[in-house]
Image 1: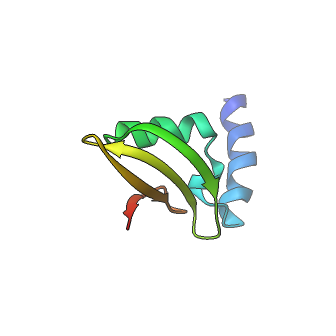
Image 2: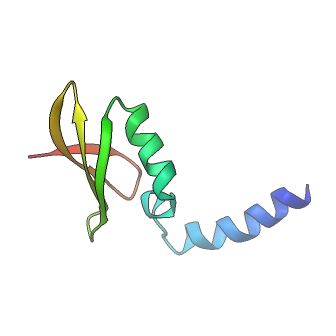
Length: 77
């Protein structure tokens, strides 16, 4: 119960302040999420105004990714 109270005490102000999901993830968590979506060899992770960008491979082909504030992963052209 105490852990839940502490978590809510820390999490609620972050949500209320509009802290995005993607920026709240650690780099390892972000890589795990990208890999779970079917991408491999995740590299060049950078934070931008739009979200977090990265390079990866999908089906052996290089792609650029954007992970937005909601945690959605999109391929960029």
